[in-house]
Image (cartoon, rainbow, N blue to C red):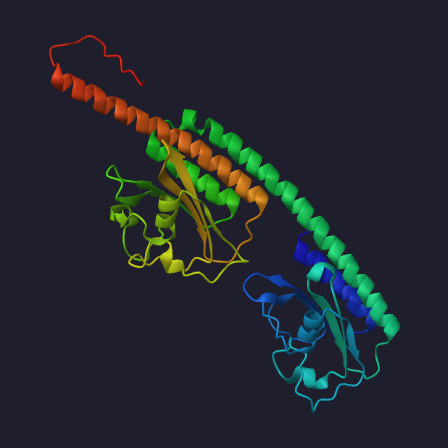
Amino acid sequence: MPRNEILINILSIVCNVFEAHTVVLYLPDGLHGYALSTYFSLGDDVSPTGSPLKKKSLAGIVIGKNEPLFINNMDRKGSTTLGYYESREEDKVKAFMGTPLDQSLGAICLDSKRTYSFSTKDLKILSQFGKMITSMLSCIRSADADGKKNDYFMTLKLLHDLRKRQPKWNSFLDNLLGMTSGTSGFSHTFLTVIDQRGTSFYVEGENKPILHKRDSKTIAFPLGSGLVGWVYKNNDPIFIDENSTGQASSSLLGASAATKDFMSIICLPLIFQRKTRGVLVLANENPMLIDEDLKDFLFMVSEYLTQFLENLFLKSRLAEARTALQKVSPAKTNPVLINDN
């Protein structure tokens, strides 16, 4: 059963137990801090799910002070609002009760159109429902994490066999980028590589266009420009997720290259011969959580891609060396041994 369906069932039980009019659940949201996750109501005027928490509302006070609260006779002359109704529906509400969830996970709140509907005993019972929701969410996260780990493992297994199935570089890269995007959940995945002179980089492959109107593969980006350029200069990865949003998305490839509005970004350096030769980039237009399991998966993908690039690099150097030797001694037809020492 999907998580949201489970939560709605719990909230409907809470509504029946307390004979409430509306029950709402606020959970963390990377973009706003906390947002309305789901609700159960006998009316039709509740704000849409995803609406940000209003800090000065009663629900906001419960989360802000991390303390339970109940009001049995609402004073409509006050400036404090419930914070989760779209219209004047809350003018009919006479009582309110809310309690924070453990681990700063949010709050569950409810209201009634009858005065003196709730007691301290009711608040304790609501707190127990809150603990149940916290435990249930923890179990769901654990199950989701196990499922993601299995997805990561299966993708790595497929990638390991990909070079045999797709020996040509372009086909191999297209498949790798598509599989990495699908498994990670990031909408855009692309690879940039440095040019032979080491003064600029370009987009070698992408699962979706990253620029609005221009073909990214025809552009040479100056080394050091944008977040990707910073990785080339510093040989370190970059992680921007729902907990670190706010950095300019236009800085991904430099100010002159306007990308889509990405809120979560991962840039991983592909290093060999003591130099960053490429950068694997994942980007998403919505905020996402980047956990350690995802990082481990992507580091393994980048290492696998680095090995492929290094092989291509060495083959290219070997071909250049053979061409140079043939120009020097065109009459010689015997095999040439290159001493790497």
